[in-house]
Length: 179
Image 1 (cartoon, one colour):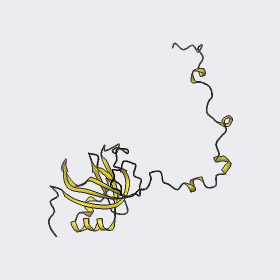
Image 2 (cartoon, one colour):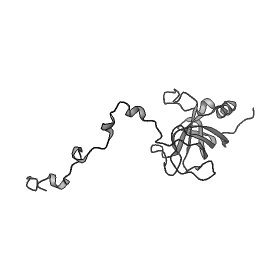
Image 3 (cartoon, helix red, strand yellow):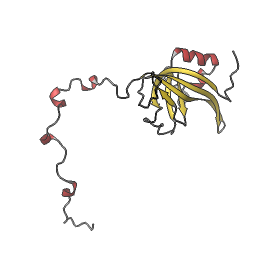
Image 4 (cartoon, helix red, strand yellow):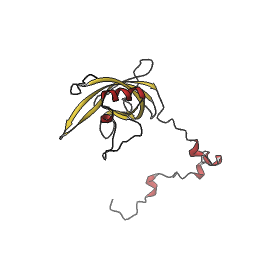
């Protein structure tokens, strides 16, 4: 096994299933970290490559208490800059990526040090969307089960709870308020 220089960065290709993808201009960066990112549950080949490198446990996402966040090995890929995302036709992709989508990512694994702590970070450069699941693609038939169909029909205007008067009509001018 050759020695890897993680201080300079080690490039590799990983594949897996997307969780919480914020990788496109449309999705924007993650609101908390302000970075483009995805949590990628690794396929077997990618996991084996990281194990061979001896870093699979180091890059697996853990909670603050040290427990694993996911049942299967999952790494967080991030970037300050918008990564290039492509579809299978090699066209740039700028849509939302739903949980469960299959991705192949070109990444750079590099060491970091901050406030006396050290670790490895995975930076994403390019993404190929292998199989896209729409962000709203959820089977909601169980949600509507046992609800009578007549209740799911559009509500008539007279049954609606939407007010029909103007907001200004709700207040009279003789309310003794100084404004």
